[in-house]
Image 1 (cartoon, rainbow, N blue to C red):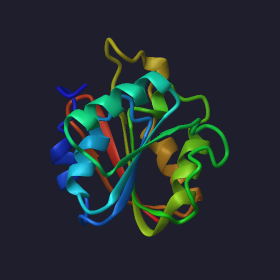
Image 2 (image 1 turned 90 degrees about the horizontal axis):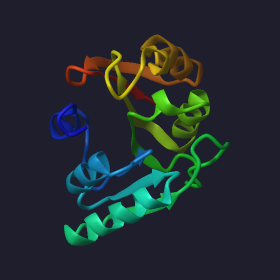
Image 3 (image 1 turned 45 degrees about the horizontal axis):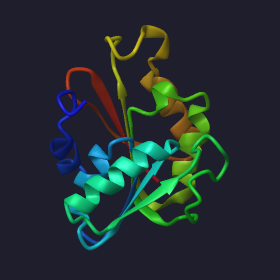
Image 4 (image 1 turned 180 degrees about the vertical axis):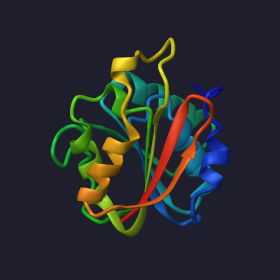
Length: 173
């Protein structure tokens, strides 16, 4: 996946300050969580995933790399208040390559909106076209995400190509 997404380039386009609080929803290997933790080096990053094995592997990785500002949360983001984080508590939330595999995409976006501070940023990255990893029927139409976000009071700030295989949508609360 690192070959498909240029994580640092994507994060460089965000309005980030080193003391912010952020999260990666569906962190998996933590590609974004680790890069975000380096940028928010005086802040806190929450890495959330439903798979304990992924969080365990990420714990080993952050320990090895001596990253101390990442908290791991085992949770189901498709549950209401599934992140367990407080309302209006984060400055930035990343949802990379998660929605295409989710049953209830709207609940995940609503959860992000709930925990974002006013003025906070939500970055959604998902697959643009079918490929060996993602069949056509699993693709998530960016217009559907924009509609859900709009209905939650989020404003689309930027839409961009996040590499050859992904689109990016940046919203502000």
